Image (cartoon, rainbow, N blue to C red):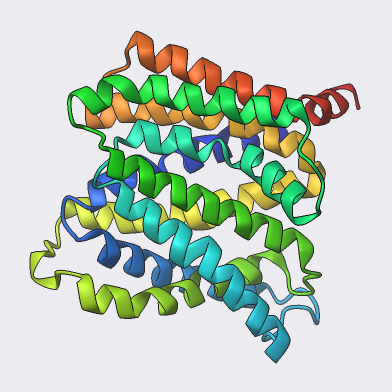
Length: 294
């Protein structure tokens, strides 16, 4: 029961990122919001990680590790989260959460490509079904202009980047603890994004109000710190079972968007989400079956 509750808490926190970002960009340009979040979350994660100092692995990165962290940070934070935050200016929070749930499928596809293996028909079909589902869920939002093609393009590029980041993460033999890896990569990602923020960020439009403060605190503490702690706890127990909780993210995401942002939940939303979940299950069915039976 404890593991189940932690899994549900993870899904609730992870799914809230889209809505929290939408609130934040009401008061600050997307790049500025992203940079503040990255630096604040990096400081919190590194401060928490080094304060634990359980063993000798809690140390500063070596030169080689720093290069690996920089590549990971560029893909996982600067490009992925930078584009994701910016896309929320042109896409609804619910669609943002739904798009994020397709990551496991893209990871399988890119892993196959990098390993020179042809993706299985089931894997390709799962991605097609999920993309059709996102298209159906997005259709009424395109009509009322709450989501644009630019927003969908930015979301797609961000999903591709984070999928490559996940594949890269799995191929590196990390010796640092997970909490430090994420602390460093978020902080480095913020440094890499900073030049773009200084050039293109409209600092004169920043309004320091409850929306901005809530967004930064929630994204940094609830999502980046508590969410990651829950995720790493689940991964320690069972990697495959942990991924089952990703199924809950789009459901919570649409509920938050409806409750807090007044985004409509239509027949298109429900049918599209069901297709995405079907695609997720189809693409991960063998792994999930093993996890449930074990």
